[in-house]
Length: 94
Image 1 (cartoon, one colour):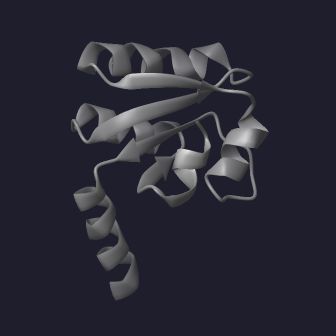
Image 2 (spheres, helix red, strand yellow):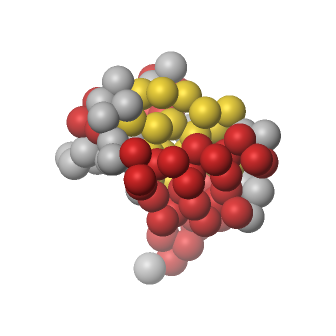
Image 3 (tube, helix red, strand yellow):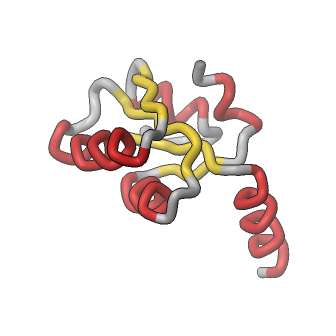
């Protein structure tokens, strides 16, 4: 399941995942099993409220690695490809 994160348009981290869930742009949310429950509980509830699939990842370290970052992360979200293309264009403009 985590292999989807390697090539998908995604956001990483609690604040960014919360933002895309609130805006209705998240397609799937990944939560690390060993993450602090107080951090990820609101994310999980918001995802369920919005009807977004929630996938449990083995660990924060494995989730970070699957996202292509060098640090552990509590959560990540796959966003629609149009959103990903927008983000790529903005980062290239910088």
